[in-house]
Amino acid sequence: MGRGAQEASDPLAEVKAMITQLIDRLQQQSVNEATQKTWCDAQLGKNEEVRTGAQKDIEMHIARADRLEGEIAKLGEEVNDLNASLLQNKVLRFGLNETRSNQSHENAMAVADAEENARSLEAAIAVLEEFYENLTKGTNVTSNPALDGLNSSITVVPLPEDHRAKLDVLQVLRDRYRGIIERTNAAEGEAANQWTSLQNDLDVAEAAAVRDRDYKKVEVGVLLSQLSQAREDINTSTKELEDAQAAHEDLKAPCLTAETYEERKSRRDEEIQALNEAYGMLVEYANQAITLLQEQPDTAVDLGSVRQILVDIRGEVLADLADDTQVHQDMDQWCATTVSQLQSTLRQDADRDRELMTVIETSAQAKARLESEIAQLKAELTREKAALQQHEKLRESELEQFRESEKELLLSIQQLTHAIGILRSRYEAAKPPAFDAAEEQKRLEAERERIYAGTSFGNATVPDGAPPGGTAGAPDSALPDGAPPVENRTAQEDGTTLVSVAAEV
Image (cartoon, rainbow, N blue to C red; front, side):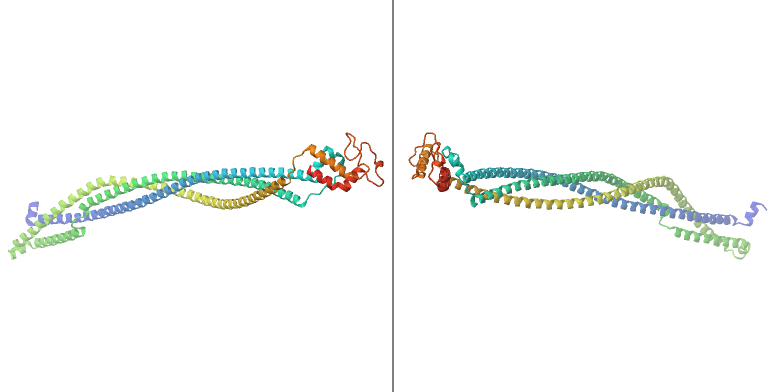
């Protein structure tokens, strides 16, 4: 039988073929939608991951930028503190130099004054010793040519105790001034050594501060570079987030329509089931076509209803096919534009990861270096504090010694002033009158006549040029029996008178 005969024998063959095609197409659409659902889920998951990662990166970069800004501000404060410390060291150095200059000048003045006072006391002691020595030995008597014959008859008078006490006081004062000179010179040497040590300490502290300041400035530069990179990373991550959000908007049309995949699948399953039922009805109608046409004339009405159902289903299937085709085209276009962007984003992420690893390694090295330098600086600070405390103690000790020396100096000056007043009053009270040779000669002649009065030499005439006290060339045998020599007798009987006369001369 030919084709026409088959169609004539099976008038519903074309309808059944169309229903079979619709079922196959709906099943293929179901498979395509399942594939699209898998793709959409994967793309939406990647997009969600990209958006979440970009958001986390933004938060991380913002936190990093805030941390870098805080570290930069802290380093800036530390640099300012170091500059203030350097300025303070300069002021301290200037004060130390000024104090040292004043102290050196004061010590030099104190030594000069002490040396001047010691020389004055030495001269006063020499003058007093000479004065007392002349006074005890009768220098004024024996220096007179008229009393040369009495040199061997003068008795030395011992130095009184009050005169010796005065000399002892002056010698004690002189020794005190010498002690002040020695202590002042020793204090000057110690102060010079301390000043040198302080200068060295200040040099070390200043060098350390300059080194720390320069290093912190370099660190600030590094942190500023990292801050600039962090801000660029924030901008990059923000751009990635915006691109991911735009991609998410593009995915809404093919993947996030108002009708979900489950709803479309349920509707399509119902349509397939309805087509299967219609196909079964057509098969049943085909098998019983003749019987049905003979027994039930109203079957044509049922066939019209089935045809109308199939037409409606065909319209819906065609509409779904048009929608699916448009969705597929949109997905192809989105994939073409998104794949290159995703690849570029992945490359940027890889570059940023490498940069982050480099920054992390650099930061770790810088941290280790900073910790080592901080430990060294703490040790240096501890040593500097100990040295400063020692210098303060030495300074206090030196100040106490200077005050004691000043007290001794004032006491010595007071005692010296008192001794000089005593010496001046004694000197003015014991000042001898002016020497008159003629009057002195007359007084001595009168005294000689009084001494020799009542002796055999009482009326003797002293030749010109003979020494007072006897005739020229008179031997000792001319004296009365039992009488001692003239010089010895005069010294024994009238020594006191001669000594008093010599003292007055």
